[in-house]
Length: 617
Image 1: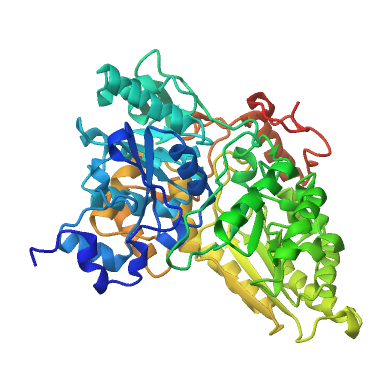
Image 2: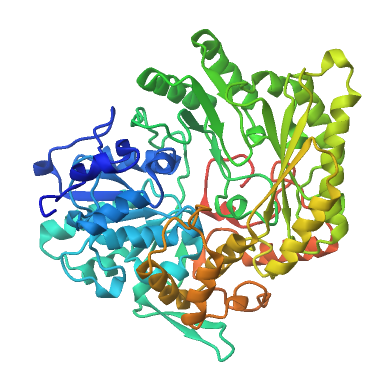
């Protein structure tokens, strides 16, 4: 067996070897002799999922535009490949060069979901890189984390040398330039580099802070170790998206990926203020791209990929202020080329017949909407700002447009929720069925109607008005799931729901602090990986790990956080002020709604970050 030394030696014995071979059309190969900084960009999930991630596509393009930087892709090997790599001591390698990840100057991870933490740390272990920052010596790569999860990076702070808070297009280039300058001048050491990097806005170096705790386990303070280390880390944003780089080519995968299509990012941020939604808060301020820039990017990508579907993405696509101009511009050539448009994330209150005509019929016979709660009272609590009549109007338009399947997203376990709110989910779903049959036969699509409801468990997330709330116990969540099942009596309604155990672990990591690191390290040592996948997640195994690590999980979940408590993520300035979040929390308990940014500026504080939008001035 000793002759097995690299991935190619075991490809015949694993599933989907196309995940590992590299060499895809449009992948970027550079001459190593001319490169001063090599970056392994790691996505802690499978090739199929990572290849579909827009953030990875953008940053791969941005970094490789720099002459002296070479960014390569790395994805988590599936369990069969991981076993072979461990069996034969085969290191984790990058797709473009096939070089070991441990040989790179920097190794960057995109942390999109808390349940990917073990996969990220397992990838470091596979690469032969010490998993804890304190154990790395000169010659080890700088390990970087970015992505939405780093708005509270504390549970994994001990594993990363440097954390990029906010958008990465500019800051990753600045970090790389600093590295190259220090190498060229002969002043580089790991310690000197990390200290110097604190001067870059949006950079958080966890090892340069001490954390002190109170006797009750809450945080007393974060204390910088040196005077030059910032007390708070201000997130980075790209103020003008039109001038920001956007990929003109896409790496074309060998195996089918989750999203084999052109993805156009229409804008960042959200004009709404749903009180449970982290993305709607941390991606502020709102910044739109112009229709001209978007149409140009779409045509360029079509010519360079041949994809026959364009997906327009944002947190709420129908809130884009120039949507008609954009879709008209795209349809002026996509119809002729038989390229379809997909408009996900549509809101109930802004769905129209005009939009219906532009929604692609490719890949799906239905549309998805998110009422989130079953009663108007609870929708007001969470500031959803949609009504039952909005839903009825939207689904009737969908049915008239030929759609006969509707998917609805809800949550259970929301603050102030009662069983009446749970029953309202069943009642609202039945009204969608009734809307179908209320239409004349000639206006309905043939084949009957189907409604799928997907109900997620509420997880209190950092930088939301509900960040202080307690999470329902697992037992309470499961009782509500069972109660809803009993209230659904129509066979045309399909009911799916999230595992309450996954949501509890997600909440622990979302609201956790640095004391969770030993449990994560223990889990990785015991083989935990792909916790985001149902077939590998085990609630009981996680609870056993937490128990052995001495962690009281209720402290992070069913305990409500104090309004004056120092929170693990208070070291981050995401732009939205705590005062605004507290005002919104108070309004939630009063059942009062807040209008969108398009109607009225609500003083969230994000305007201080800049941006080119018409609302934050």
